[in-house]
Amino acid sequence: MSTTHNKVALVTGAGAGIGKAAAKALLQGGYQVALTGRNLDKLQKAIIDIGGSEDSCLAVACDVGKPEQVKRLFVALRERFGRIDVLFNNAGMGAPAIPMEDLSYEQWMNVVNANLCGAFYCSQEAIRMMKTQSPQGGRIINNGSISAHVPRPLSAPYTATKHAITGLTKTIALDGRPFNIACGQIDIGNAATEMTEAMAAGILQADQSIKIEPRMDVDHVGQAVLHMAQLPLESNILSMTIMATNMPYVGRG
Image (cartoon, rainbow, N blue to C red; front, side, top):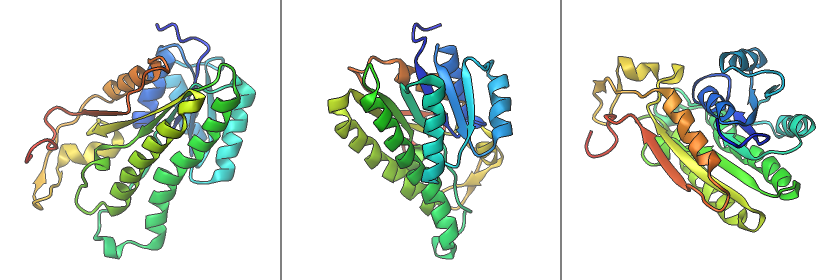
């Protein structure tokens, strides 16, 4: 166990997949962890699954794309734990894999609100707390995805928002300097979760072929998030890429 006891982390999209794995790693690293997502039952089950308790964890239902719900989330966090040391902006979603001209306004905005606006709203509230708490400061980690670098076919909303996350990350890292607030981005490729099951069965490639893609243990991602979180605030991993070793990303695939 780490010596980071009494530190507090908030993980969005924590009911399953990468968020749940990150919450588990942070909990095992000595953090008190707040888990948020849209489904309270899933969050409460996740707390049990990761070995949490009423003392060490808090579950708060929240749609991070709605600023009024984000404000209530941070009120609950402050009332329960009194501070925030780490925010992992993980919540996100994709749109149907169809030509971009066939996407509806609602499909586009659903992804923008969840992936980009949600990270912005949560970062705003975290920064407000980090500036005023004692000791001052904290760390924000954004889930950028491999799609922050290169798109998959038929992924305009997801790819656009993940590219935007990179700009948000760098801006927070810059503007947070005077207040001991660090910000970094983790770009994840092919973690084995429910969302990536299609990759194991075969997924569309740039050349229009369908290929099975390797995946990695999602707990490896959780450990990477914990590594970023545990650094002293004088140091920052601005960008980390963690991926299945043999996924078709580097080179020509």
